[in-house]
Image 1 (tube, rainbow, N blue to C red):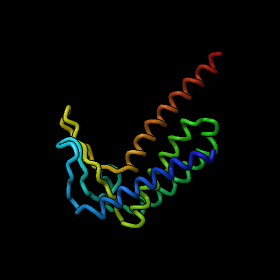
Image 2: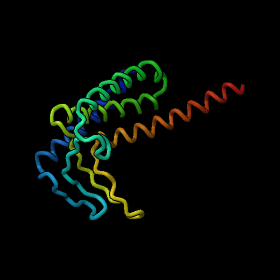
Image 3: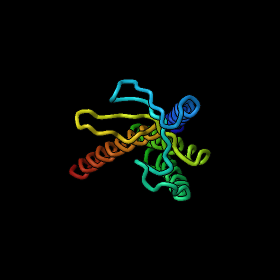
Length: 159
């Protein structure tokens, strides 16, 4: 069970390292084109939640994040036993939550830097970071795990 905690640690380390590199090497608002105009690095700060919602509500983020971290650890040790896919998704979720929590705790804001334009639909995706990516991947994985588990349970009931 404990072996999967390494995934959360890797996410946290990658997240914090990349954010540190952005803060130390880029001016706020500076953009480095990687595959212009579709992909680049843009030094950005977010004092809110996803997509800038609830700007400046640090007390709320602190309470919610602590609750989420406790819930993730609880579910990891109770519901995810023997379910590696579920365990990995929870550890990605934990790593992402802690990565952004560290920013809020020490900087009062989250450092974002991945800038993506989706040309097919001409959509400028909200700027994000490694923790955000881990959170998004984790949520998709959790949905898949829930759907799979639901199907397995329905098959058991039919038998």
